[in-house]
Length: 620
Image (tube, rainbow, N blue to C red; front, side, top):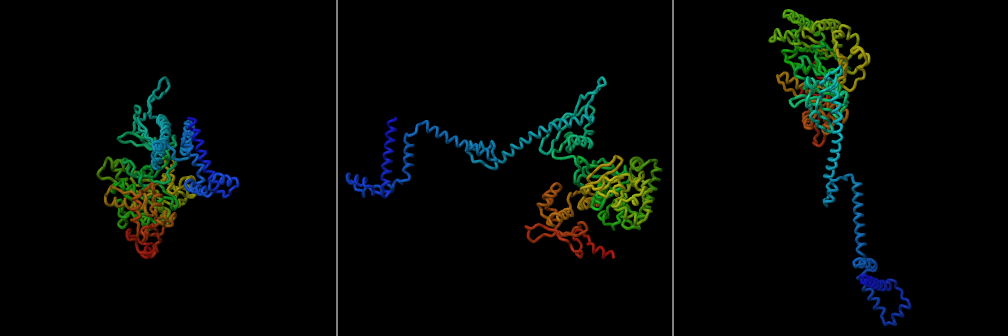
């Protein structure tokens, strides 16, 4: 075998040498004397040699002779089996190293890619991305599951400390024998929901579903906690990404969550720590002061209180008197509702002029005297007992008088307003007559001692330190932010709240429902005026669909944005005292935009309101 390999090697080398020799004569172009003598002695024609050489060089290029030698040497048995195996192993090793390097450097290096490469499939980037996300979600779920176990122990400890457990006392030692048991936990990256399986003996789930319990749990865990009690049982939901801070925005839509069994004069004041709703009963006050600078949220809260009361109570059980000394601008939308209490022959329940204030207060004073006489005759102490026991069919309605700007009424009508108001407030609680006064400048000469004593409840928005001192007795209301943030001061102390914002469209829907006797009220969380104000401050007046949805995505859906923008076209809106119209460009690809309306433009077609110039002309 070795002789055979040697013979083939010598033959190939000799053949290659002859080719190299022939090509060297052709390419060098130099003939030595010795070469010529040898050629002559052998009788070889050099011309024929050159021709034969040229003919051979046409078939095999000179530069490929070395490659030809190597190829033929490899094809023959010039390499042993061991060398071939080692060479093949090196090739596979290089491929394996390159594959490992690609996996390390590639951001989609997952088990899915290895399976694809092993099965000789072309890697799909979408499938690799989905596999990577699934792997990350599984890892995140394991982390949240471990965290949920820690929160579960904290939850059980808080409920135990609050007394929702079974304790046994033995030899002057108290030991916990029964704790709240949790059936299952729903874990997500956003919230942990704990389903209560059973409670100890003597504990009621209705007691565990109160707001103060959720607030105590939240203060310990450091996250917002919600509670739900229905046919499926009691659940506590811990919002993972939340904090205990007061929300920066609250909508009137949360008014729907008010329990149906709340007292007749209960109203929704806003949200406090842990997002817990704050409800107050005006009958407990019995009178309240709402103070704050312009734009702080005072008028918005008054509108929300009125809408909440008239939507919960019929006109037979609730009457309202509105004192609007701004020419009827603030309470103009409430004209025609059946809850307005008529005072005299000409009044329609809304007091707009200074000369109407004193007669209206005297009429309320007379009504209060008549009611007290009825209570005395019926041998009851208050209007609640009278309506509930003695005369359930002939109920006496509650009466609420609301001043939008008490300071203006005090200045225009004189000090007699203060005297009458303080007298009525002092004796009217039993008769079911209550007052809410709003003011922008709560100075000591306006809120005198007579008023302060009979108006114990206060809601203070952002105001200067001196005004805060007049309303709250401290400077806590100075610098309150954001808009709508207020301090509720009552017998329970001070509570920081975020008052709900009620939109103009929601007010209109509630009033229409009250007039038509419809109980279904459509509550809108975003109104056109708010969108226009945001667009003027942010996008230069352009009403871009995507930008609006990104700004108000937590309060409105995409199709609602589309419907709202379509309904705003060619309509005029009053924003911060200026009139603006929404314009639809001729090019559908362009966004709608807002333009300032000239004061001489005609009335708005849809709302039927006049411009300011027209109002002045008609008044003159």
